[in-house]
Length: 437
Ligand code: AMP
Image (cartoon, rainbow, N blue to C red; front, side):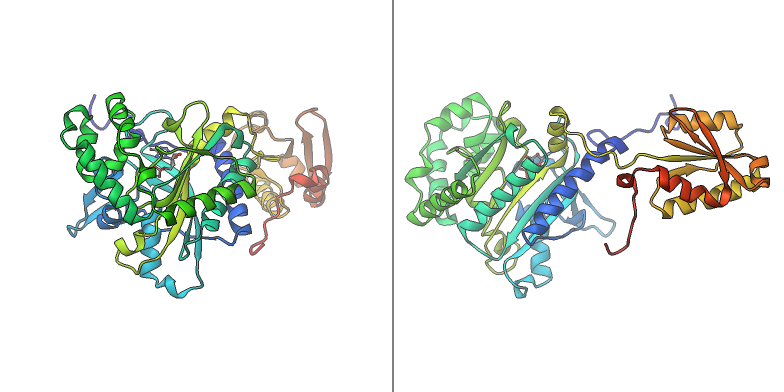
């Protein structure tokens, strides 16, 4: 087969989102927007492309994301660019770039954006996927950690899937005590590298915490005998963590403590958490986050405490579908306008435009097909009503309105068509759009 005649298709691991799935996307977006607004969050969008540095420094160059999964390339001007693999680093870059430390603190953002990771594609794991998430930058308080976990919990509840998840919580302490723990881990793994998987051999030196949540059996066995973080936690970290837990209890958010949870990214400190699928565990976490007090400084700003969380929209939607959450069918078309001849078509187009203004979903007035095949087409669009404008009707200034379910027809004056249809459509279905509403 020649190159030209090869069928074009999506890139491996990237998917089209077709209208039916978009109904779910819309529902997720609405739930996120609604809950975030209630809590004073504002929306932010950072570019898809950033200088690779933003993520290499921000996410950490010893993480899977940066080591293996980033789409990084050289631009025409020989700058190294990456497509964003996650939301936080870019948002903190924006915080610094726009001098947001002079805004009232904390700054609270939410986002719903596509992200890109060169991961091995499989169910629930794509190379382009969407995340919604929120960040609170400019304050360090255990109440905020508990509040954003609560916000996440409420969104999962609104979407009808909260019961499918178990909230796992842990602390990885302040950067200082984490550092002494990491040193202890490095010492422990020193000389044992050959028993670790290839990834963990690298991690042993650069990011030993990650070995603790490696899924390989040999690594797990070694990790289970490694020094325990509990022995390295300083009093401040311990107290902070206990407060997060107490506040979660106060808010009625159930959780499970998981001492092994460390999260994949370098920039976390103190609170870390993930929502795990109760039936599948860590493999299919739906979302997670944590505190990242050191990130802003890493990216060249002043030391600024922050906390955030991100969820995978595709995974959220897959869970909604499994429990049969039905999104509202907002895309339903109510009316089809069929017409014969150019003169009738002109009238039909005007009627369509007036129907749209009245908040009625309508289409038609196209092609030169026979009336029979236009009616068939109307059936395929599953409309409730068809307006029929033949040449004779237009000449007599009338139109036929056909009830598609019953097949009954009535004839009315062309001047009354729009009003007549409005009176037939359920008020709940009327879709009026006001700019600024
Ligand atoms: P992370 O920042 O890696 O913890 O990702 C947060 C959430 O994004 C995960 O819990 C998943 O729900 C989702 N996610 C991460 N990577 C992918 C991917 N490759 N495909 C689909 N969803 C993903």
